[in-house]
Length: 387
Image (cartoon, rainbow, N blue to C red; front, side, top):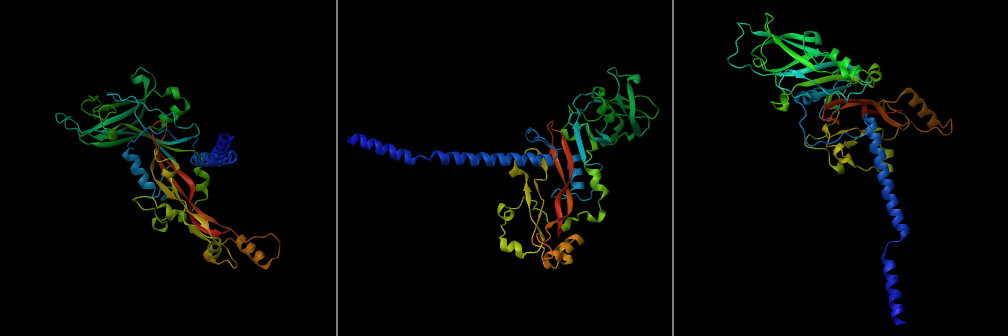
């Protein structure tokens, strides 16, 4: 009987020491709900950036220097657009040659370009190597370089179409750019017609030059920084409506927007300033920091730049009377007066909201490891006002 009592007491102690079933259910339910909220939030954020899923991460790769330079031209250190008219369209895509042949034929896989994207300009970027010392051109200092679109698999004069041709100094070295928009547009209409490009080099007299003498870097034998590259300037249609109402005077000037430190994003404590209700009510409408950290979201593996950006948010009260420093609209002024005089029930004070928005630029790798520069409208609160 005593043993039975002890066993019962031990069992009761064990049961008491275990979390209750209701506690576990509540704990796991809260975790599930938190994960669901995070998943839904990330999915919605991807939609803002025009994606269904985040691109696959293929490890650390180097973005083409041209794309890095272009990004730095159109965006400040936070990714905010310097001038909305600097970039043609809102998307720039770069592609490396898939043939990786020693021959002067190139082919680019354009499967990641959406059918709805409008091709504005297409450029073929070739790196011209310095000619061999033994090369002579009968006192000619220039050669004619022509880019042809291949129309069938038999590469002859009937099976190709001239796209671009110009004179290039024989002894020069560096990047040469050819416009091939017509060919890329035809490839977008009929993907099967993309048989590639062919390069022909001739003397000024019209005779063909041995491509071993006038050489362009290939994808097989040269560093990635010199590989043949196709660059597309496109527009997905999101840009036009905003530009119609854009004002050049609204272009952000670099000093007017505080930057995140170049060495890294602001500390978590700096980004998590808590304002009490009394402080919020006592402060008039103004812009506050709101740093979006791509590493915390889990996107640092495929985003090249920026590492994050300050979206800002608007916070504060809009008390009567509204001064011009609060940038009120006429409607907000009237609403504030009606509220102050209590002429109607249920009329609140105006709200503190963004009254000017700026775009940001994202440089990232897509699923095929192509580097893309994309501009997104209305991502940064430039200023706040009572509306």
